[in-house]
Length: 247
Image 1 (cartoon, one colour):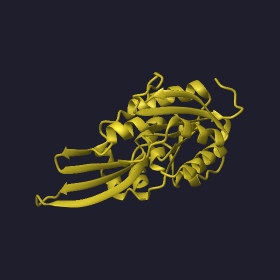
Image 2: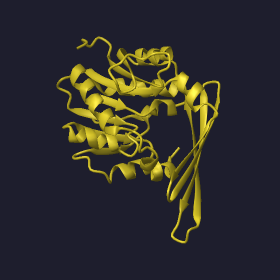
Image 3: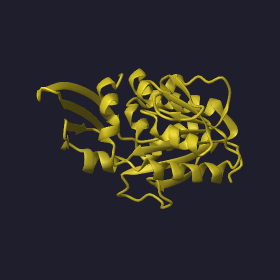
Image 4: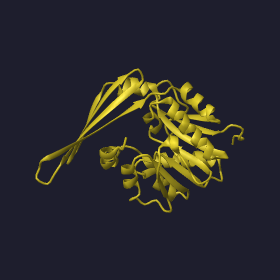
């Protein structure tokens, strides 16, 4: 999927995301688990806001996304020295190893086939330094069941109206987006986007990480220092290659 329409409106519809806080927390975790971390991949980077913030913190960034439209938006932002590559997660292919990989904002949930997600984790492990760190987050089954569910949301942003509709069944949430953009003649153009998210439970994600030759060394409730609980909507996983000494 290209996320073509979504790419155009993504930043406006995610204005509630505190990217600065996410970048600060990731910076803390990278420094905690790999103090000499320098080269970092932002996997499924979307429109690249986090890429830029991490670049500003001194990391050498490689921004990767499977959507040319998302990358087009990302490449227009300020991210000093960043390299942009159009690749899917399961086909990650780098020139050498990296110190860290981050994958944020429920990107792993967009991979609805567990076998494909397993391949993505294997590619991450392949290109990580032996003591490299992989940080990713995932929306929880609780969020899919109790928050996303079969709910609908409307975002009214003056010249843009977005109708967000969910259909959740058996751990899979199909998301349909309809965008209504107001033009100069006060008429509206309509465009649509649809995609799905899969709810992975902790045991599934842990098994995929371990099968890829990594270990989960920490879990957090979203981008905080608090451990997750039964009502957590997003869990952040910190992983290292198996055999690498924990910090």
